Length: 347
Ligand SMILES: [Zn+2]
Image 1 (tube, rainbow, N blue to C red):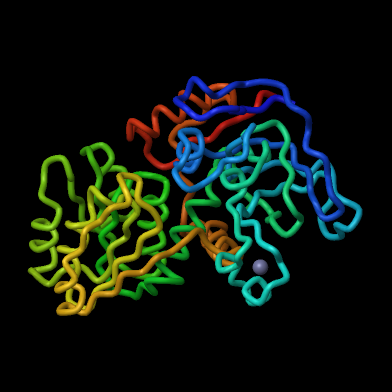
Image 2 (cartoon, protein in one colour):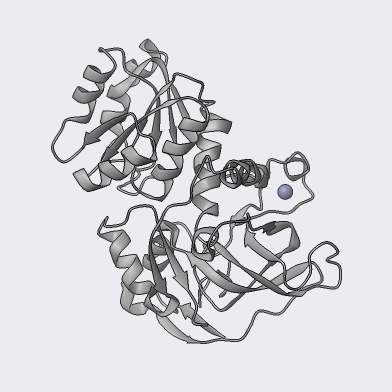
């Protein structure tokens, strides 16, 4: 099968579009013919190489995929060839206390499929194999490009806002990177719960797009001071919740924008992990700083319910042939994407 593979770390030039062996099925596995996969920042981290994390080489990235089932292992009962499915990208042991309780992300063996797995193994290929537990029916009415690129951002944003920050009707929520994959989900999840999203993005075009998705206030971070704008919008009170995934470049403004007793929830740090905090603000203002990592299968299923009803829409700005994965990653690295990029294997 054709796949996008890298055998060493580096720039997009290490990505090779080439033939590799099809994955072989274990008794509890499902093989899908990939109709579309998604791009995530994880793909770029893995390709560049991350200090403290060993990427198993050769590596196929891709933590999102949707397609048609073409094979099932001998122990798989409820899934059959021809089923249209997408992948829940969290792999865990399925037997520990946390897994038994639906808290997949607390499992000591939790791994992100296509990122921490390998050698090979991710969704950016013609065929992909995952355990039957990780198969989810594709919501009707979604295009393959949509179904194949939504899971990771939907479940991550769902867990951050619903499971961790516990957003409520009326909450003002500051959303960094609001036009990106996570941000577009965050805006729409806020609306489902009656919360009031404040979108931060880097251009008027991106903010216009956020407005159409339901953002109530728009801040252009290139032209405006974010915490100053937040003071105006909230009449100096500060926001109830900050949705963080940028880290070093935004942390100080995130903290400055929070109300007394407000909640900051973060799932990543694309601009750097060092985020100095003056602890006096943390205790005096009695803020809540919450970490969030991926999401449980139930987070994805809950989010998909709202997608099926049309309250949350997948947002795909580009679809590229699988062989052009490098172009897709460059667009992401240059911050030129709104929503998601889908990758489509050749028919
Ligand atoms: Zn477990």
